[in-house]
Image (cartoon, rainbow, N blue to C red; front, side):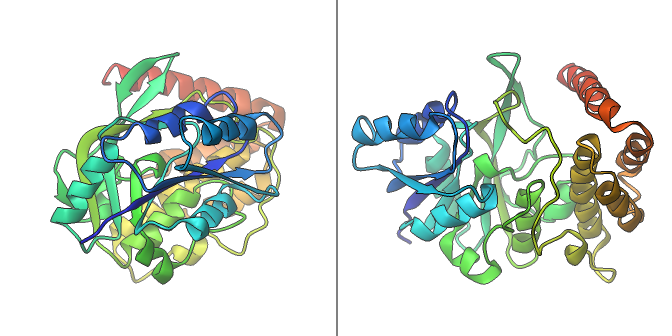
Length: 313
């Protein structure tokens, strides 16, 4: 099976980080056939940074595509449409790969050619340059139950994931207009139809501290997609719990940003969850507080939880 990798990098106001991301793709021991950076209407100098890479060390390999701001899903979908490779390697402009990422994915494809999503383990960069391992499965190969495996661990994140082009022809693209949880929405769509393959090799690095991870001011989404549409009352319990996990996590962020009504609606719909009752109650608590209090309180809670997680507690 001939495998070629197109790297798709959505870019929006990541001037400080994007060069590191693109250079990590250029530095692969198994080079990609192209790196497509989609500038989604940035207002900083990120596109100029990529332009310099196109003219310099990335000449002939890095391509810059510009479009009006449409959100990360629109940027990824544009990159996928522009790409020429058999497999789409997703890389956020905040993050980076270690040199063996694409080689490890190619090995997975060779061993398990019929999967719809290929992922590796990853580390988390925080506190400047400190690196912490993310909780991921320990076994290499096809994941027996993606939804059950994802309950307390990370199987897939965008910057450690590769999707065969043929899969997008079946499931469609990322949900345009969705601002939070769009990656999990896509993983559900893929896992419903294809096996998921994973390697515990930590070949990607996710940055917790990159600038502009998401806007701090709430604006309603304009999308026809939702997590409610993915809920299946006749479906497996683990699948519906994963749907609830993704939906409630995004609702918590929405509540913190001031989206009281939208967060309350999600809390009502996904109140069936048994595994994520804590998140459910956090949403309900935040929604009772003045909107100006919510973001600082949630940030304080998250910092404390991260410190505990780093200590293995």
